[in-house]
Image (cartoon, rainbow, N blue to C red; front, side):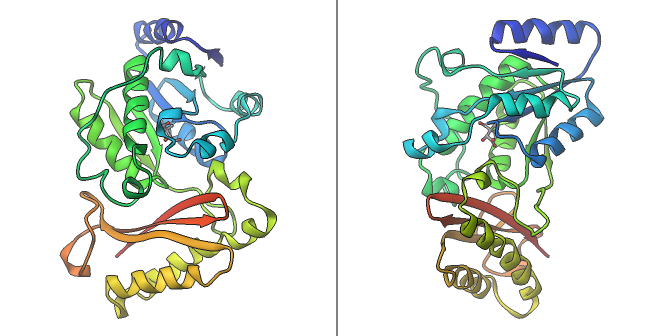
Length: 280
Ligand code: PAF
């Protein structure tokens, strides 16, 4: 495993791999690696000969400067974890390398960026699009791997890849959970012990909501989920929406859409967690 900080060096490594006839898989991350990331790398290793893992806390996707400041960073620990994985290259650039000048590009992500995360984190998906297109350009992967926990991000990245001249297969990988059901996230380490104890209520409520689906409308389920989580003194729901998988449009009747996903964002103090489940 080689650690590379510069795009020019990364391109050299990729070009050598290509000359050797190797396919390239990219796993973009912001570090603070956990088993969710490792599952992406494992998945990438099944179908690619040469694996690039990027570690870069992308400032342009943080709409809240204090969130950027607090975001967990520990490159040494990440490299230690990656040493036991099948990554060939760890690409860990600094901000100057990725943004030598202000990125003024805009992206047509509508309507996917108008709902849920897009409503509450203005500019977030523009920042994601900026960094992901830069990574795609630098790595030119055959396939790129993203977790389904960031469901809206995945839909948006599929759209970006569809608009690109590069042919990149976007692979969405299942959410990996702690034994108590909490979706793995780099932000989980920021939870206080009390918040961590409370956090599994998010997934438990989503699972219970699925069980209630046959007896209640999407609106009733939405009210129930929001009310149940908000009843906990440490938790505040930012949104819970049941949307159609493709367009992320609100589901008003179960029968009108084939694939329906309930997406949630919850604040526990200053930590914001997201999760989702498919409905039948
Ligand atoms: O999901 C993430 O960790 C980030 O949004 C990504 C895709 C690595 C872009 O910075």
